[in-house]
Amino acid sequence: MAPNAASSGQLLSLDVIDGSDSIPAAKRLLKSRAGETGISKWDASSIFFEMHGLGVDERPSPRTLVFLYAADMSFRLRWEILPALQESKCVVAVPYIETGYALGTIAGLPRKWLNEVFRFAPKAQESYRVNGPASVCLASATTGFIEFCSSMMEQDLRPKFASYFDDLERRGRCRSL
Amino acid sequence: MAESPRQLAKRLCEEIQKKGRDRGLLIAFEGPDGSGKTTQRKLFKEWLAGEGYDVVTTKWSSSRLVKPIIKTRKNMRSINPEEFCLLHAADFRHRLEHDIVPALVKGKMVVADRFLFTALARDAARGLELDWLLHIYSPLYWPDLVFYFSVSPETSGKRIAATRTPKYYEAGQDVTNISDPFESYRQFIRRVIQEYDALAVIFKFITIDAEAPIYDQHLLIRKLFQESRERPWMDWNEEAITDWVNMLPRRREVVIGS
Image (cartoon, each protein chain N blue to C red):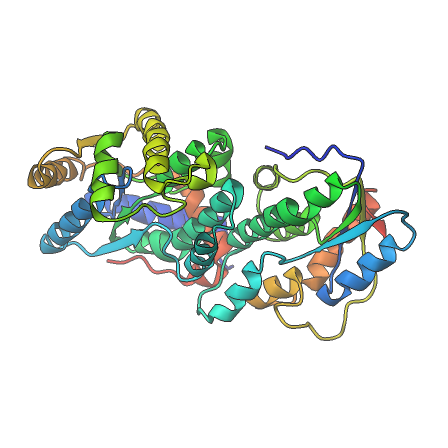
């Protein structure tokens, strides 16, 4: 199921709390890397942007949101991440699967189920998170996945995501950028 | 003290069980394209309504939230088997949570024009692992009855060709790489039917000969339905009810229909 990521490229994962941090943080991360680089950003498939524009008065559950996140992730892997790795580039996936796991964990979804949903995604060689105070105001739903989820679930989920990444960092599973 | 989601789910399940033969059933109509299941579903729904049942119909890939997303991508031919699967899983989950489970909890009859098994058959025919598919679709509310409209690949192909050109994903052109939609459909539907036939054995579908006269099929379905009214509530659905309660906190104020 998991695609063969074996190549001379390098996959770096970067999870952010504020969607607007994605590109600046990814650029910061790539600054010290030699050779060709690339960035794969959330919602490259435009699923969430389109859904936001539908104006349907029904909220997706966290489980549905995880499926949609995984579909977007699959799209990004196919069109952006894996081709770049094949070309030996250093790619930052911002965000990557940990953000999907974070939503699932916050919502109480079983880890085993999350492992299955994201089974297709190769593991990143290095993992980072942006650690710092979030903006005072929550940005619009299309700024990032956490903003989208917060909008759908009608609560600011940023502190919960931050706490999840704090825990990940404490366990040595990612580093602060 | 407020009732926890698990306690609420348990109470809901007990309430449903108490209804006995008056509880709502989930009845799935499954089968390949061109098997005539939609015709049978419509006849059955009309008959059920005439018998006084409160009936809700749910169709495959029809959620208000995810359907437009899938439709655009199908038109653009831009999704691979994995994305196809994940998007349909999202659509299914949304309908399960918003339409199917709430109706069942209220004691309504739910007639599903395609259910989980459509995803299993089509996605497995696209090369995805059945085991993975079952995992990602869990927890599931299992249907009380699954009518499987069995038809040969030749009949399915003929019936479809008589009315229209099969669409790109319907014909499986994304996996066969055959440019002729009719030829691609012929090959792809064979795989889908193989998967369905295997699922029919594993999950004990009620197989209907979809090449028999339409009214004969309808009478048989009525008879089989009436025989199954005593079907007991399945305990493993409790997991799906618990998940539903957990996923949609605002629905905790649910009231069981009388």
